[in-house]
Image (tube, rainbow, N blue to C red; front, side, top):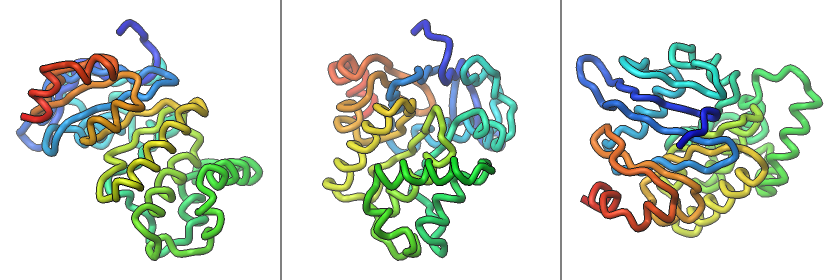
Length: 238
C-alpha cells in the first residue's frame, strides 16, 4: 500500500517486561476506510492498540498519524491528534448517566454549543440513548452499553476510531446491529480500525485487513482477497 497518510505502523516491536509480544508489525489504516485487524485470543491485537495509543511504548519501529510521528507521544496527546478508542468490553462509567458518559467523551472540548451538536449526532445515531439519557449506564443491557461506549468515542469528533472487539459478549442480533452502526459511522467520514475475531461479519464491511498470529502479520489484503486467502484461513482457524 502506497498511501502515506492515515495511521501507519512500521516494523513495530513491543511487549511487556522482557518478553516481546509484537514482532515487526506494519499496517496502514487509510483515511475514510474501514481497516480490520483479525486474530484469535493472544495474537497481540490489544497490545497493538496499546502501542498506537502510547500506553505500551515501541521497542523498535514507528507509529505515525496523518504524517506526524506519534511513536513517543503521551496518550492524551495521541487522542488530541484525532484518534479515539472504544475499548474491549465497553467499559462504561456505570454510576454515571448516559449523558454524563457522553460528556466525558468530549472532555477536551470547551465549546458547549459544539458539545451539544456532537451529542445530537450521537442521539441521531442511537435514538435509544436519547430516550434513556438520564439512566445510569450500569443499569443498561450489554447492547445499550455498547452504544454508550461508541457514542462516547464519537464525542471527541475523531478522524480515526479504533474499535476493539465490538462483538464480544453480544448476541448475534446485537452484533449485526453493531456492525451496521460501524459501517454508518464510516460512511459519515470517520476512518475505522476494527479489531475483531469475528471474521465473516468483519470482512463484510471492511475495505482492507490484516491477520495477526503470535505477534506477526501473516496475511494482508482487501476483504475479498482475505476471504480467499489460504494463509489467512490457516492462521486464523489453526
